[in-house]
Length: 412
Image 1 (spheres, one colour):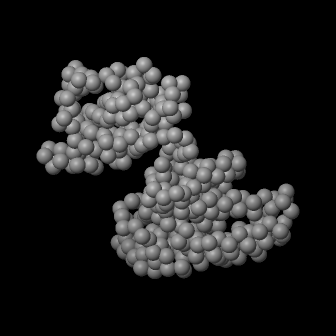
Image 2 (cartoon, rainbow, N blue to C red):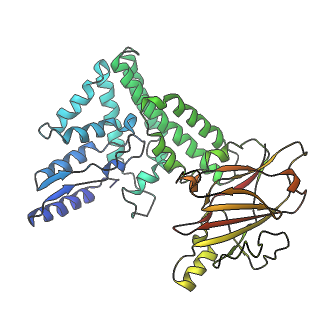
């Protein structure tokens, strides 16, 4: 829904009114609460308008789906939504006054803070830079953090902090009102740290000198310090960030001697004969293998797209990845590891012809293991100084599959 333009709002009303006039009984089941992610995006005024409009025109049931739980930044809009569902008599002004009254002597400053972020959210003229509107809930649920610093600029954030600091000064820190102000500040601090990390991530993608890893560590440390307060939905935050940012495990190697593994090739194994024919053996000729990157699934790359064009559907089953690399250790006393940022599917890993690691899917019952990073240590007795062959058999029969995030050699 975001940005909440007059055109979109009127379109909603026209559609609802049309069905209502036809005699239909309607359920109000929006995904509006996805908007804003964990930023202080406030759309309570428009929500109140649409909810009361619908209630007066044939609404017989309500299902408020997709409560993301970022209460530290979206407390006002969540309060209005929750209250409307058991009390439709109060005006919007009465609901706002009730919410602000919970902050005692700080209520005036808190009101100014929410009025500011409401104006920024609704009246700034912010335009989405994204074009994919097919995602339920809107792309600014998924990707707002990528561009949030252009909406909540440094100037706006300074004003936000000034108002919340005024609110803190008006209350006793240990009072109920003081703790509630601190709750708001935790939500805003999280947003600020995310935007700072995203600024560095842009440099990270351009291979420029940056402090992205440091900013993410700072963000994670802050979240750990406030996790028990429920100002931020930690799981939702990480889920959406991990769609774009490198795995936290990848950032853990920042500053260590490491090297991304490149030059991967792949062979599809539609008849599943690779093990019997010893495709993992150092003598196996994989000259017919095709180059592939490890930044997306195989069905999204040339070999997968060519297969789908020929066969009418994407390739599912077994694929074999091959790559050669040199040892980067300075001595045999060091341990050489590989960090896989993500493998989607069951993986069996071979080094110079010997099986060294098995990672089933789901791994230990974890259905999210397809997107999680993991380390494996390479056995010294199989490592050579030069031209090591790694063969990885990946198998999956549903959805996407493959090594879809980078792998790196790391000295432990």
